[in-house]
Image (cartoon, rainbow, N blue to C red; front, side, top):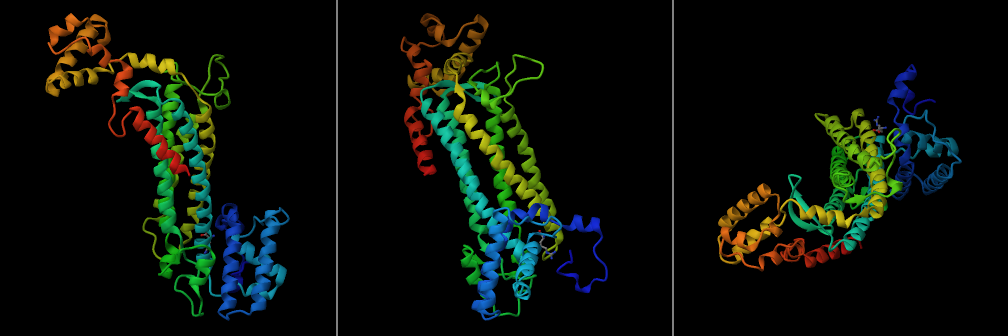
Length: 457
Ligand code: ARG
């Protein structure tokens, strides 16, 4: 295929170099955005008297047909084309001849790619947000079922204090609500239209960039044309938001993996989200959660790859930038796939409440509450802490638990201990009495559920 830019060359591009140079395999997914951008451009050219109204209408009509033909599978994108911008333009010229050749007035591929990718990522981010909201719904349904499900809360992966499973799982909901706000923030800064920057310096034609920007749903147009074609900050921001989503998913996955092990047995994943072993008949492996955990590294790689590609790049457009789409599309697809399998896995998992409760009975997780008991009776916290520490030592040595030490023994440690201590250190009391805002008590959990429910709307 002859290149659009063939004029000054005496030889064709070497075949292998041509393949190497082409980005059609990655940017063909942006055909709709490319065509929509071209339609707005053609309308602007006519409005400004740069091409005739007839020509503009002819171009727009034909572009519409090309879009339909590709969408319906009647036109295959030619994988020998250099990129999607060249493909659409050459198809247009093939269909309407010289009129088609007028489209590429007062614009360059540099602003085309910059505008197409922004529109594409804008649409796709909506999709990602929808998927995160599905995950939030799955978390909510588990939280609502487990407002009173007591389990050990951990620090350093050591049993620390009793909490409810609703409290634990709603932590992830908080992370994912922030992820949505991060994506929306990135989109706000990204929604600036570079179209009309042309190669880099603007153009001698009297164009109207405000018109194309608003026609394409942008909030404004880029004020500096060099920046318009060379800025890829929005990709770095989006990639870092994707990487953060994956980091959150990897932490969540890790807990799902731990919880479904025999060592914990806090949950059981549904058969449809687990796999067996080829040799060990008893195995039920959390492969989906493990894969999500693993794919986190891949998305970090996409972020670091893009930052590194951009490092030290001189202004304005450089071909290095063609690599941007490889990374960001890979990250985007990975995040979407991970979210799509993760939500139903969470929604269908079975919470083994009894096992959680049994685990909470071990590990002296009511020790803080016993210290608080003494504080409420007038002892300074540091002294209470020390007495309870000694009591825990006594329990370890005598193979017993705080709930089972007789009162007389307790009173050897402090005279403040009385019969009511036993009620104060039941797991139920420990949880119910955590009435502070944001704590594990019922009221706070209900408030969190309400917040996430409102957020999804
Ligand atoms: N395929 C190119 C990319 O993805 C489009 C822009 C090419 N511009 C240029 N002057 N070679 O970055």
